[in-house]
Length: 245
Image 1: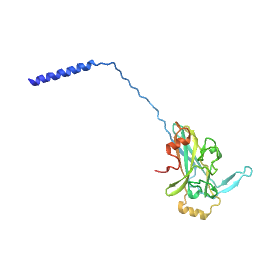
Image 2: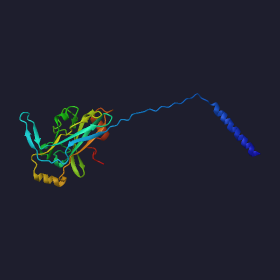
Image 3: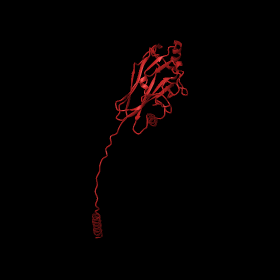
Image 4: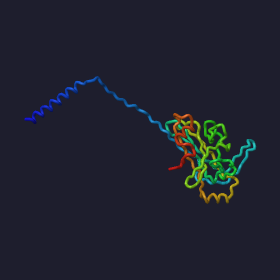
């Protein structure tokens, strides 16, 4: 008998709770919406106009008597372009690493005396016009990038070989599919290089000398200029190893 009463009491409590709950009918409503965002992306590609395993032969200087400009026969074309393959405007720069044995530059006094170089590189005049490639640490595009005093350069050990690394920044943001062309134009062997000098270098570098290039790209949105954007994204040149795995 007691069991039956207990059962009835439980039913009564549940009924009261149900009625009480039903009486709390506030005026409410719900709705939902999905906020859809399109995610932009930055993607770059490095494009080189260069014939692999090209043979270096001491260059022969040829002076144009009309313009006074000297060009070099036996120079090898090595053109470096960076393409913006992504959807967003992007700032780009390249790190060009030349074995220190071939280049007279150093971390503290980059370049000049370039006349002591075994391997030289040059740039086309158009490539360092205002808003294009800048080789200078002082970020002044008005300065000729070969002035010998403000090269943006640091030293980096890559695979047990010390390289002088030149940092070249493209100052204008690239839109989708735009190309920053001709960061470097040619390389050539110094006319004074001897067989003895080459043999000495080969003992360290081997018979295949390598110029290494890394390209970096980052979003332009939110940054005042290429230097601020690239340093914020990757770090200041010389403070990290772009070739690190």
